[in-house]
Image (cartoon, rainbow, N blue to C red; front, side, top):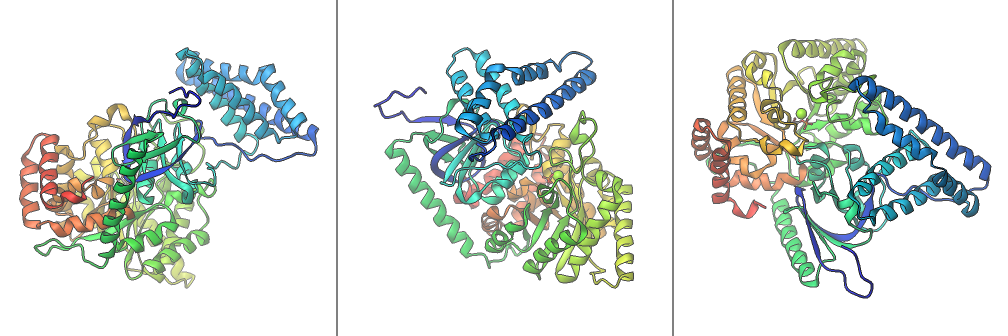
Length: 587
Ligand code: PEP
Ligand code: MG
């Protein structure tokens, strides 16, 4: 993709995996491995600035030595050698000399001097045809990023230019996505990532077009290249021809028209043509999404992922601060419900505290309710905050990653303990607030009949339920083909959960991504779900789909699906009905 001066650059199409629909048209902004240019400013005291650089170098060196030792100890080999190479970069006299010179001659702050110097190195290396050297750019970026963080370890934000742009990055963490300035974000494309990662979920919730799995994109594209991101088909089109641009402008305006039409129907009930009503609610990660929820016509929030509060600081805010956020949300939604999921930290999400040792299998490790039960003081702060908010609207609480009865009972005991305390303190709360659990671990689905009498509702977290049932990591693209929502085992577990709930008088909803995937709406309705909780942007389309379906027909389809041994056949059954009744809604 070399550009030749004087010749119009050719249109190039890069294909990735679509994770969030939408069309964005803007120049590219490239950030290497998740770090953007630091702020640049003029310094007064050259010596002090040199010392800041040296201190950051020293901190980085210490971290790398510790990392090397830890990796060697864990692996029992010398795999930590990689960090030795990183340390050598810090000793590179030419590099250090150039940064020092930039500080002195250009009077630039040390972060920027480092960043600019590194960019020059990287630019030179990207031109080298040798794949080994090209690979090494990743190491340089790693060290540079670490160094930059060590100037101000407490801050790490993904920035972007003030102009509208499409962000291209090696990878984005959920916190990077949440920290983005969305007003200027026309979309993002990354090398890593998967459909079910929290970054992708957040992009869908916020309606940001997004593509993942674009190999080498950070190396292969240049900043400011005009581009189109097609989040429906997973294409990133560089230097689009005018016909391409026109085609996409018209697709975009067509999609927007449909979207506005659907949003205008926000007062319509989510009810099938034969009269079965479904509670259609929204999933939120950030409290500012509440306006999207209201606009979508969702009947409340079915999943509030409170671990996103960890983005603000590195630990959960205190009781009163949480109570303020929850109360604001409860009031804004009232009389519709706000289902607050207690902290689900760990796994691929943010940790609640630094771990002394990395976990060998974070998804099977210290996450969800396990963390909360091991930190009762922190858990009770959250429960008390939820109870405080329950006096101001319809609030419910649910627990993530339940794997057995003991966890449910212990969590409920703590709720009661908090109720007793608040009563004593004469703080008002709703003594009848609903208590539910997420069904996202197969063991919980299998014993749903034993759990059901303990709770008011089940919310099926298909994202995790699928990965644990078929043993396929939800964020690992190598095994993405095995990650099938329509796997017969998954749909049996869903059915079993719904039936167990019904028998005990507990309602069942689905809040995983499957709930917002219109191919599966006929199947889920047929299996008997009573609630679907989806990203705010998906609400209008799911409502329209429900209104196009007959529950009786869906139930017959589900019966057939439950007898089918193949996930592809089950997918085809459900998609077939979706195509028949709402082809215009499918991407
Ligand atoms: C799920 O697992 O389906 C779910 C809704 O929870 P999360 O995606 O936050 O793990
Ligand atoms: Mg989950």
